[in-house]
Length: 185
Picture 1 (spheres, rainbow, N blue to C red):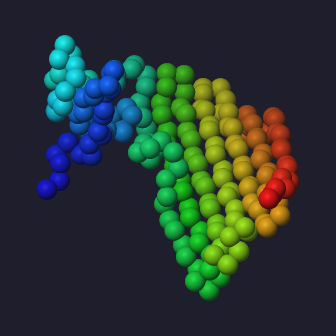
Picture 2: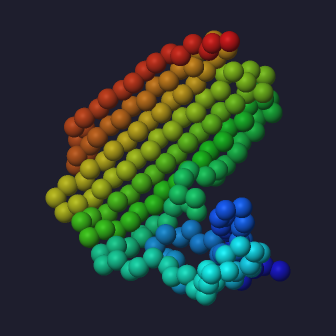
Picture 3: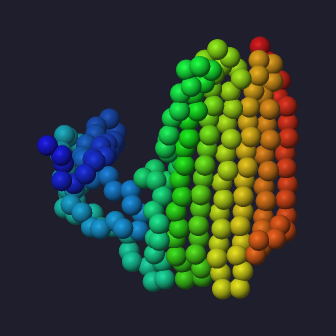
C-alpha cells in the first residue's frame, strides 16, 4: 500500500551517546510545501523534548511564485540512458530546469549534462554540461551560461570551460579556461 504522505525521510537526532528517530514526509516542491504532520517514533534519549505535532511549510512571500518546478533534488537528474551495443558505448543524459517569479523579475535556469563511456576504452570517457541562468527584469534580460567539456584518453584529462554573460542577447563578457592534465600513475 502506498503511503498517503508520500516518500518518508528518516531523521536521526543524536546527543551524547543516545538517539531519537522519526519519519517525516519528504516534500521537495520548494514553493508548494504545505503544513504537514510528522509522526514521531521515540526510541530513547530526550525525555525533556516534546514531540512535534505539525511542521509548517515555508511562509508565503509576496511577489514570489514558482512558475515551473525543476527536479525533486534541485540538480540535473537522469532523463535518458542510451546503450549502443555495436560501439559498446553508453550515453547518459541528465537535465533540470525551472523558473521562479520574484518581485524584481523572473529567474530561469536550465542544466543539461551528457556523460559518455565506452566499455572497450574506459579511459576515453567524457562529460559535457551546459548551465544557464537568465534573469528577466523590466529593462533588461541578463543571461549567464557555463559550458563544460571534460574528456580523457589513456594519458591525459582534457578540461575546457567557458563562461558567457549576455545582456539583452548581446555578449558583454566571455572567458574560457583550457587545460590538459596528465594522468600520473
